[in-house]
Structure formats: C-alpha cells, structure tokens
Amino acid sequence: MLIRPWISRVQPSLKSSVRSIHSISSARPFSRALSWKACRSQTKNSFTKVLACNSFSTSTPGRSSPVSAFYVPSFNLFGKGSLVEGANQIKLSGYKKILIVTDPGIIKIGLCDRVKTLLEERGSTVHIYNGVQPNPTVTNVTDGLKLIKEFGCDSIVSIGGGSAHDCAKGIALLATNGGKIADYEGVDKSLKPQLPLVSINTTAGTASEMTRFAIITEETRHIKMAIIDKHTMPILSINDPETMYGLPPALTAATGMDALTHAVEAYVSTAANPITDACALKCVELVGQYLKRAVDNGRDEKARKQMAYAQFLGGMAFNNASLGYVHAMAHQLGGFYNIPHGICNAVLLPHVQLFNSKDARAASRLGDVALQLGCKEHTAQAAIKKIRDLNEQLGIKPYLKSLGVFEKDFELLSKNAMNDACGATNPIQPTLDEVKSIFAAAY
Image 1 (cartoon, rainbow, N blue to C red):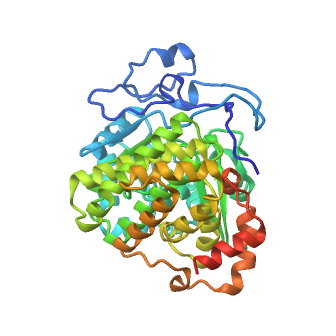
Image 2: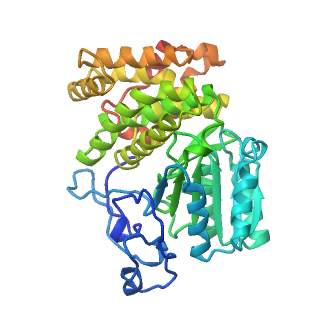
Image 3: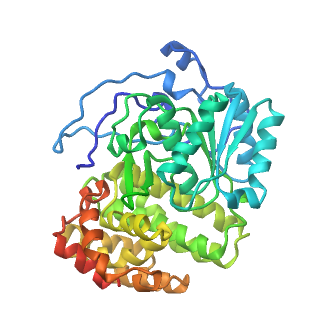
C-alpha cells in the first residue's frame, strides 16, 4: 500500500494547520460553533475545536501528483508548566466527561492522579482506563471503548508514551466510527472524526502525541497493524519536561533512538520534501546533542526539553514523509515477540540504512545525517558507524539474538514486513530474500 501525499477531506484547523503554538497565557476556549465565521473569530492563540470548522473534500492524488499536504495538530504545548496550562485549556473547551487512557506505570508514579486532580478541580468528571500494555492490543482498545460507552465520555486524555497514545487513538476512532479496529488498518479508512483526544507525553521518542499513526497489536495473528489516518491526530499535545524526569535511563535511550529512526527514515523517504527535510535534520542534530545527556541525568531539564522538541520534529517529519523498512521490520518483531519498539528500531536502523546506501540518493542523504551527528566525514558509512556507536554508548545490545528472536521466524517476519504500510516509502523496495538477509545481519 502506498503512503503518498494528499489533501484530506477533513483537515485540522486551517489557520494553524502547519504551525505549532509553543506556549500561551490567555487563550480563549476552542469554539463549538459550526460556522467558518465562528472559527475566524478566535484569536491566533485560540484552542479551536478543529473538527467543527472544516469540510475539505478532494480526491486522493496519485503517486505522481504535485499536490502535497502537511499534517500537524493545531495546538501544541511545550516546556515546564505545560501540563497545568493544558488542564486550563481542557476546562475552557467545555468537555465534562473525560476518560484517561494510561498504563500501570503512570498510575504507580502518581502522574495519573495528578492529572485527574487537575481536571476535577476544573469541573470535569474523570474516569480511568489503566490497562494499556507496552505494545497496545486489540483487547486494550476494546476494553477502553467499553468504558467510553458505559460513562458516556465526550473526550479522552492519554497519558504516557506511544502505547497509551496509540491505544487512545484506537478507542477514540471506534467511539465515533464503530466497527473493529482492524477495519481501519491501512491509510485513511475512517469516515468520521474521532472523539476529541488530548495527549500528555511522558517520553521523547514516538511522537504519537502529534501524529496520524497508531500501531495496534493483533494478538491472534501476532502482528502490529499500522493505522495511518487523518482523523487520529490529537487536538492538543502536551510535552512538559517535568513529566519525563522519572523516565528510566534504558527507556530514555530506547525512545530517543526511536526519535532518531523517525528522522532518518523520513529524510531518506521517497516522499520527503523540503519541510520534512528541515524537521528531520533538526531532530537528528538535537538527538546527537542531548540524548546521551538525558540518559546520564534524567533530571537535566534542558536535555529533556530539547529531546521533547527533537522527537516532535521527528514526528512532523515522518507524519508527512512516512517511514521505511526499519519500522516495517520492527513492527513485526514487536508484534511477534513483544519487544520494546524503540529497541527494535535501534538494532535495525544501521542495518537497514546500510542496505539503503546502495541507492545513490539515500547514500547522499545519509551523508547529511552524518553531518548533523557531528561526524568528520559526511558519508553514509560515517552515519551508520555513528548510529552503531551511539547504541553502544547508550547500552543498547546490537543484536536481535539477545532480544529472544529466533532465526526460524525470519521467513514469516519478512513476509509480514513486506505487507507493512510503512515500507512503501523506503528508498529501495527489497525482495523477500533481502529482508531476510537484513534480519540475519542484525541477528
């Protein structure tokens, strides 16, 4: 399935669809009115209800179409204090029955209770679904949806990393579109906007708090379904470094390498454009400068803040240029063995890019990656070596064998990878044997 640029029938708010608002102090609530005039009446800092103001309707252009679209949430908060400001905005929005979607770890550290208190103090009734697994499943989505229906929730707040955000997207999508989550595997399968979703981020890696991607594991088939849909983007994302201070070093490393993978894959993608290039390269630069610092000292506020920007930039890049075979292959490892996604990406990234470097354009672009990572030589080989060195510095084991992967599964893993939507924009479309050989090289 092709991942290609197009203009969607329903876009985020026109006046701010290609820019993020970093901070606000006195924004008005987003409008529930249905008229375009009502949308225009908001100030530039308004948190508008994005789904009520637009009804663009165009056909999906073909692969060679000169038309492209840029997807990004209308409203995004960064920096210390963003969590409280986000709660203020939710109050102004008028949403009263909120389902928090999170995982047991967020419950344990008390962050869920803190958010619940902030929302309740501002007049909302809050319910909690805390059953999200590290690789969220169809069952997780179904269980969360039951609570939406039971309590009549009008919105969702996800707290965590990619797992919580992806699960929340699945719940929100089914709440308004119905059916099963498998119905939406692929690109733009939904017909209606999802239930309004606010995503509070606690990791610097997945960028799921601002993308149209959701990855859900199908337990019976042991695969990860890629749902890429214009309706799954949150209406507000929050990246407050204070929510990231407690992230363990190993998870900081894994999620940081996920961010780097997003940037590298988006930069060498066949769907890259000047906007995604700028986002991708800045992400690479920031990861090179601040990831090790964040791993070494989790309370380094500057490192946490800069990594939050880095992963968001990586998200802006791949949200529009898509990804490649690192993710196509990593999804299979995660779905089959339940291995953390960031670790899968970290191990596979140098091997897939070595394969991609056979393409002249990709090799040249990997040279740009080397430059941003501070390499003396601006070559594909230098970039790949730097990525390997970074994995070593972060304590990430470089081989799949150490993660419990078995060679006997390479055939099935490779076949499933070739059906993953993320592989469509890889610089080279590999054969089945070539995918198997990449798995073998990483083993």
